[in-house]
Image 1 (tube, helix red, strand yellow):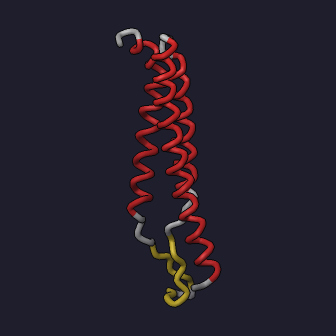
Image 2 (cartoon, helix red, strand yellow; image 1 turned 180 degrees about the horizontal axis):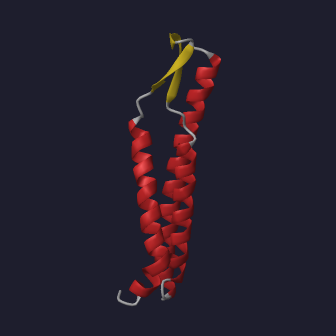
Image 3 (cartoon, rainbow, N blue to C red; image 1 turned 90 degrees about the vertical axis):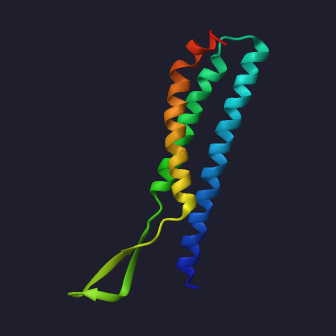
Length: 122
């Protein structure tokens, strides 16, 4: 296998692993914050702040995924001496992580803005 292709695939796998780690870490952070608020009989201030962490990591994952290039330059096919770009099929994990990051940003924003108000009712 070509060394450049091998490096590209390794970079893509590394981005996926880091993205999964960040999303799991932010979820653990939120759950720990909720338990900390329950233990301290607080008004949800730790859970409230963990919403910012969820949004931050969701945005970082979105940015990291946006750096993955899904175009192939084909040197064997050319039209009027210009290379043709063909789109690669996006992997299932890419689509899953992209959707999950979207959900994290939306839910994290809701937690960040309103969990302290909702906390009074629980």
